[in-house]
Length: 160
Image (cartoon, rainbow, N blue to C red; front, side, top):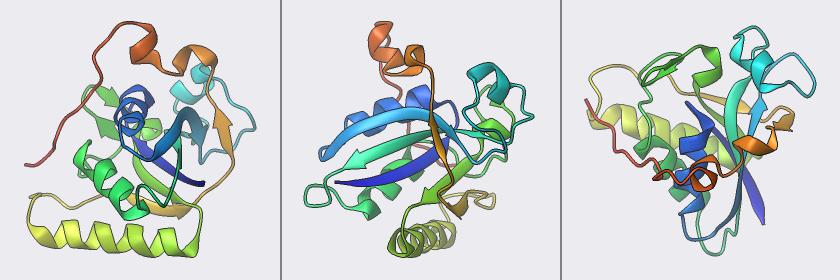
C-alpha cells in the first residue's frame, strides 16, 4: 500500500470521490501544511494556522496508479481558484498536492503541466506541488461525513 495526499477544498467532498476509486483502500480527512501540531477544525478554519484541509489516500498501486489519482484530483475541483472552492474561501481550501516520493512529485508536476497546456482552463492553474508535511487526522465527525449524514457524494467535472 502507498499513500497520496491531496487538498482540493472542503475535505468532505475530496474524501467521498476518492473513496469510490477502485484500488483506494482508505481516504482520511485531515490537516497538513501548517505551523501547529495537531490542530482542531476551529483552529484551521480561523485561516491562521496555515493548514490545508486534505485527504490522505491509501491505495494499492497494483490496482490504481498514482497518475490516475492525480487525474481524479484535477477532475473533481477547480485548480484555477486561489484559496477557494465554491463557497469555501481561505488558505485552508487551497489546491495542493503533497507528494510522498520523488516519483509522485514528478508525476504531479507532469500532470499539472499537461493540464495547463491542454487549454481546458482559461485561467492559470494555481495548484501547488509540495513535499508532504505532517498529517493530522481530523476529528471523527469529519470522517465519512456524507455517508454518516445520508448525503450524496460530491462529484463534479471542472472546466471553464
